[in-house]
Each structure stands twice: as C-alpha cells, then as structure tokens.
Length: 382
Image (cartoon, one colour):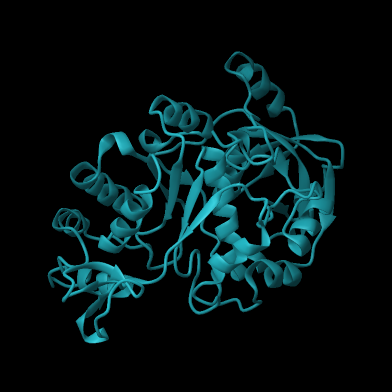
C-alpha cells in the first residue's frame, strides 16, 4: 500500500485511559476558543488525515508553503493549516506554554504546545493561496476576517467533537485496514462537494475500470451559499451506490473539513489527503475546487506537473456531457457529434429545476437520486 505523505501516519490523539487526567489538566490551563472549522482541522491533524503535520504551522513552514508550496522539509504541501487568534486572546499566553483549545461552549477538547506566536500578512496569504485579493472570493473573505496573530505548535486531541454523520466516518488507519482486507492494491479517490449526477458516475466508473477499488470521499463541512447541504449529498450518494455500484468495489466515507475554494493548490491538498487514506490514484476534473472564474478550467490539473514527487497518480478528466445521439455520457475526445446534441451537466440547471416542480432530466441524474432530492424541501446552503 502507498505510504502516508511523509512516510508515517500521524496520531495525536490522547489514549482512552489518559483522557480524564488530560481533561482535568486542561481545565487549569489558559484557554483559546477556536471555530468549528479550525476544530475540524485539528481533528484531521490528530487522526493523520493531514500527515505529516502534527500541529498548526510555525512561521518557517508557513512561509515555505506560501512561497514554495512545500514544507521546510521539502515535502509537498500547498495549503497552510493555521490557528489564528486576536492579540486580546493572547494576554495570558506566551511561547512555551501549554494551552487548552475550547469550543464555543468553552469546553476543552484539545491542548496545544505554543511553539511560536507570529504576525502575518493577510494580503500575501490571500494572493499566494487563492491567486486574488478580491473579497468576493470566499477564501479571501475568510482570510481577511482572520485574527491578527498565528500560533504554531503541536496539538493533542482529548475529546472528539460531536458529529451527526459519524456513521459515515472512517479514519485513515481504518481505511488502510479496510482496503487491505478487500485485497485492493490500487484505489482511486473521488473528491466531491455535490450531489451525484450521471457525469460523476461516468468519471467514477471510468476510473474504477483501471484500479481495484473506488473511494468516494465527500467533503462534509461549511460550504458557500448555494452548495448542497451535507445531508442531501450523503442521502443522494447512499442511494446511488446502493443501486448502481458493486459493494465489494466501492467505499463511501466522509472528509470532515471546510472547502477553501483554492483551485489548483487545493487540488494538490486534496490529493495528499487521499494518499493518507491509502489511495494510489486521485480524480481531478475540470475546475477542481474552483469558484466563480478565478481559475482557468484545467489549472488544477496542470499544477500536478510541478510535483513529480507527490507519489499519488492523478487521473485527469475533461468536460463531459450527455450526447443524445450517442445516448450516453461522453466527452469531447470520444464524441463526434455537434453541440446541438449535447446536454451539459450544469449544477446551476439542476438547482434551478429543484427550485420548481420541473422534472429532473433522466439524461443528467438517476431517477432514484432525483427522488431523494425532491424529498428535501430545502437542499441548499443559505
């Protein structure tokens, strides 16, 4: 099986028999409240999803990721994982301290060894990660809303956060065991933040033709307005996989994180995550992790040329559509027919039809999935 990124699967969780002791210790420490998004980043560090990271980035690694797309160790890394806070929250905190990280209810769920406290340039962060400083970009807007200080240091997870979708969760140590038990030597990871239409099914099954197993790994967490809600995505995928996929060739599990909409950089980041889950291949489609018109359509594929040492194989797919003459899902490399026969897979079109009583085209979406979508009265993020 492919080794984790950096060669070792990180585990920064507190053993069960030491939890009560660590909770008591955390109660006496200075506290820093973190958002739900940062808490999920912390969990992903603790469970090895973000291997080789053992905590939030210190300044040297932060600058190296921004400017070189690598950690100071020269290992590929494209998205800085940061803990930000305000100066007011650091009045009783200094470098070298052990602090408790708490949720909105002020309950400690992790500790952080404060290795470094440093300032950062939000404009530089936005420009290098997102390629723009326009606050219409959701990632840029989030960057400019960050606190003025960053804290770097290793973390320890004491208590996992509540997760309403826990039944869909598998950690990297678990997927690696599962893939081995299934006898899979090659696994393709599929990233998604949308409900499945026939175009997605076409890509997944085409990729599966060349490997042993398919790992469908939807992003569950905060998304932008107009995206499908988490429960809708999971209901739709559960229905699709039950009816149209081989059970011994497909695994569905969630990735708990926020979308960053960082386009090319996020495509590499997503590939690294799936490598840690045990994938040998990763699907990269048109405008992967994009938003609006901020990135060229295939920039997220072209960036892989920069990283021959990534050690996960990207599978690139061009735009696909339904051809009424071919009577199937195709792409421009295999369909000889004019545009008049094409039905594009448009998320905007599907959303528009869901907002009315208009039937969803069977050329775009399975009837069973369409039925699931209709059952959700309010399927979109507000």
